[in-house]
Image 1 (cartoon, rainbow, N blue to C red):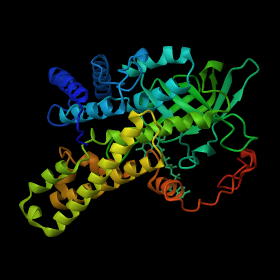
Image 2 (image 1 turned 180 degrees about the horizontal axis):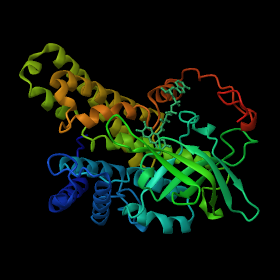
Image 3 (image 1 turned 120 degrees about the vertical axis):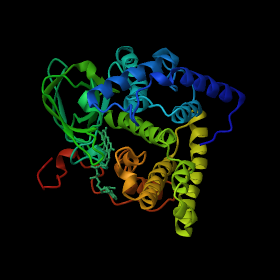
Image 4 (image 1 turned 90 degrees about the horizontal axis):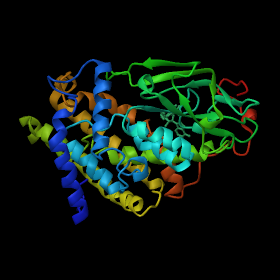
Length: 405
Ligand SMILES: Cc1cc2nc3c(=O)[nH]c(=O)nc-3n(C[C@H](O)[C@H](O)[C@H](O)COP(=O)(O)OP(=O)(O)OC[C@H]3O[C@@H](n4cnc5c(N)ncnc54)[C@H](O)[C@@H]3O)c2cc1C
């Protein structure tokens, strides 16, 4: 997104650029001969780098100053992402914590929670994970079955399973959505908790992906004790608290795509290096299609940014940016793979990770079908999909296997 910087934004851009010029050599290498291949070493290096970015004011750009942020707007966040992309250094490691979970704690947490957790999160002294999805609760997130039962002394006991939990293998804490009252309709009986990953009864099991990494995990909870103070946003208010996280998730993915390098000039440069492809009308047509979709997203992104900068919450149309960026980048990846052949997937190829990772991004942060449903219903005014669970207590719904949930 080329922003037409105001003088203040131009000043901010050059401030970020000069910090990066000074410190880029301290960043861990993710690609090339210097790339760190040992997973533990890489995580340690990326945590240290996030600490440096935080000290330089390049992490938590939109967080209020009182919590260690810069108190700036989303446009400055995009400028910062663009400059990090331009400097070809990694961004923050804990994008989930800083981009989504920290803002949820800022919006719904107690003063004690904010004082305890936000600083270490920003500096990556403690990394966080999002414990929302379950085997039978992904798109239908309000169907979570992990169960927290309150004890006589006000503390809680948690049992259940989460899945797809990015970063749980090195996280210190997770923000977890659990059912606390099964006798009310499903959206109403939920509560959000802060869960220490080293608590007794928590088991983390890694899942390896086609890209070679093991970013995801299954996380099991077996009668895990949680203090009364672990509740975020109030008992029974978990759905509203989760919606805040999901709103920040959509915005983080949409605004972060620049930093990930999903832009048409980069795709065009890769293709133009191959003489035959450069002249091929079909390749040119497909590239033109991707470029025009990404340009359309850029202008839709400006609308989202303007709404955010004015303190408004972006509407459901913001989901279109995520759908379009991901599907266009997948088309671009396919085209690059067609043009470069197997070299596109070679270990040292700059495209291998993007090509193998992007299909997963179709599901993360809301699947394409769900976002299209939302856009159909709430933007285009099409009739809503029938809902059989409206107003029915969760305990009376049947699970997929037919057993009571
Ligand atoms: C890269 C990645 C990172 C992730 N990280 C995390 C994380 O850190 N923490 C976390 O909690 N979760 C995480 N997730 C999980 C993610 O939130 C879920 O994958 C997502 O919500 C979809 O849920 P599901 O995979 O269970 O698919 P399902 O909900 O089972 O859907 C399966 C298919 O059915 C379609 N479908 C479902 N319902 C409808 C409907 N009503 N109408 C039309 N089509 C429908 C879906 O679009 C999809 O194609 C991650 C996922 C990915 C891929």
